Structure formats: structure tokens, C-alpha cells
Image (cartoon, rainbow, N blue to C red; front, side, top):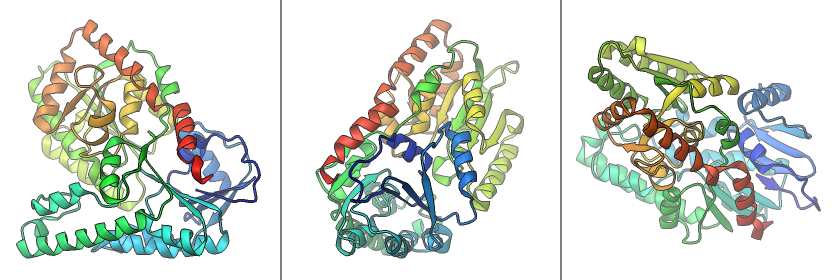
Length: 417
């Protein structure tokens, strides 16, 4: 996001509308007109506005000019099968050059995680630079996983099984973390979205970091009824990405089914967005896993659903499930709590540090057994226990409201405005 100095007064617009609507765009310039810079060069302005309204129920009833960037291909992960972090970071520099050639702002606020663009805006553009960090490009957790030879989606087995390759990757990560710290310290103001992110950014960038929880649509979801839910219907909300760990959800469901009597059959509805063919292939692999676990009839995928369909499923469901390890925050977790779902999240990251109070407004688990044990406990709770947790879950989300975000975000970046 960039603010041009020519504007004496910024219109009274909801920043949440900007944030939620353009979370996947590159750069936003705000004058008296909002300029949204994006790489979807085939998307027509009205198509974008319609999708925003359908998915978020946000009517962007002010003037927006879309400026298309042709160099977005250089920040796509599939362009860099190896040294992905470095490749995308260098690619973001090319993208920033294209953007700054089209408009030089006075205030530049990065909310996409492209910190390697900071030197360009600070020194070439003479801008005041702010950062709203959702997820550190590299974290100490990543260094620990490589050092401990843990196989994950970003540390493949052929590396974790090799001492030489592990040492080489660890050196690469350390050098990248150093560079990440150098560019990060070029920001005048740093804001993060959770305690987990704050912990890592403090170590890598600066000790002066403020938490501003992202805007969650708590108002709409709090209007959903707490009664009339299907006690055996579980819902998962999250993009179809490897780190969301949907496979863990399927294995936990399989173990839950094995615990249940034959006349009680739980159902898992996975709601997620598919960005491209890679995500579609991931869905196919998850279907194969369902078949191998013999739970195909118990799982339903709902992809790229409308906002109204999301609310309908939330209204009908009883349990929310979130399995990402070290989720930086967890907007989906907050939305489940607001909807009055009994929510089970992974015992790490934002859900653990900021959102879930175990056995009060939700539950935390760490593996398929603990997830299935807690799910089994929930479906066998009495109605009074269920009602008490639902009420406390709903009461706990006011800290994450859109209005709270607007107030704290503007206060946090006031020094560069």
C-alpha cells in the first residue's frame, strides 16, 4: 500500500475493505483515487469488483483504478524449484521497479511480504516505508527444522536424509536470514499480525514491533444461530496449500470414525480456494488419500465458494477444524469461533498464542491421535457443555473485529503518515 503526498486528506475509507479485498494484489496506491496494482492482467475491473462483493460482501463504491503489472511471473514459486525464497525475493525487486516507474509514492506500506523491495522505495523512491508482516519469509522455526533434519513440505526428504545437503541448506537459510534482516531493518514502522510473527520478526528485524490483529468478519458470523447445528458435521476453512495440512485432517477423521458406533457417521467439509492447477492437483491427491483411508463418503470438498455458501455451511456445522502447524494467525479459526463452532486448532503459532484458550473457548491438538481424541470428546459432550463453550467462543473474538483493526492499524502507522 502506498500513499501519495499530493493528497491533503485521505478519504474516510475502511482500511479493512482495502485489506480484505486486495489481500492477493501486489501494491495499492491511495490518493483521492485508489490505485490497485495487480498481476492478473486478464482480469477486468468489473470482474474483480464483483468477485470481491461475492466473496467478502464488500461493495467497493469508490473510484478504483487498476494498474496491471507485467512482471508478476518473477515472484511465482513455480519459477524457482530450488532456492525458492531467494528467487522470489529477487523477483519482487524487478516487480517493484516496474511499480515505482509507474508511480512514486511518499509512503509505502508492504503487506505482501516483499521486504526486499524496501531499499528501492526507501532510497530510490525516497519513501517512508512501513511493513505489515503476516508471515516471516524465513523464521527460526525453519532453521530448526532443517537443522533437526525434519522432513516437511519445504524440506524434502532427499535433503533431510543427507548430512551434506542439510548443512548446505542450513548455510543458505542462515545467509538468507541475514539478508532478510538487513532489508527488514530498512522499514520505518513494522507491524505484525500475531504474537508468533512478532516473536520471529523481533529476532530477525527489530525489537520495536507492534501487533495488530488482522480484520476478521466477526460481526456477520456472530449473527448465526447457535442452535440447530449438525453435531457430527465438521468444517475446515483454508486455502488448498501444503502447509494447511489437510492430510492430517483426513487421518484424524479416519481415527474418529473408528472410535464411533456405526450408526453415527461424522462428516468433514473442506472449504478452500484453489488458485491454480497445482492446487487442483493437491485436491486430487487428497481425494486419493480419502480413497485409501476408505472415508470418501465422509468428506466433501467445497472449492472457491461464495460468501453466502460459506455462511450456510458454518451455520449448519458444529465443529471447526484447523491443522496448520505454526499458522501465523488464523482468520479461519476466529471465524469459526464467531460462528459458535467448537473449534480444534493445531497447538502452535497464532491459534495457540493469541486465539484459543484450551477447554474454555476451544481446543488444541498436535497429531492425528490427539485431534481424533478431542473430536470424539466434543461429539459426546452434553448440551450444556456445548452451549457454554459456544458462548465463550463467540465472546472471545471481539479483539479481532474489523473496527479494532482499523483503529489499531492507523494508530500504529501514524508516525509515517
